[in-house]
Length: 117
Image (tube, rainbow, N blue to C red):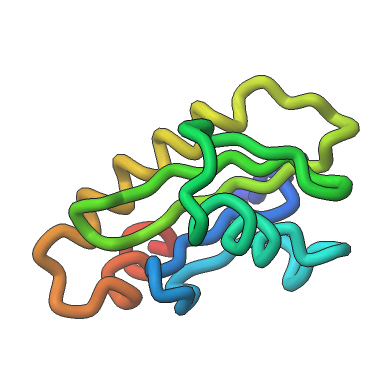
């Protein structure tokens, strides 16, 4: 019996460098209103607030900084669903990203190999 992928109500999960280069992304290729760019401009670049959650447009975004690797993990979900576990998913992804990227010469390859394997 072939394994089937579970479909989660998450719009997008992505990992990018603090410089902005996306290393890994799953989910919708783009989100209406580009909430991730708004997140970067409004919260991450200006370092506003200590929160790790923002509602931007139609999306609820949870992010975690992986400071030791210079990476950012973002989980985006439709805000209408009010999913209370997106922060936990972002935290788990942060731990996985940190473990995979730590000491890897090519973080992008390490993430693809670790998440997509």
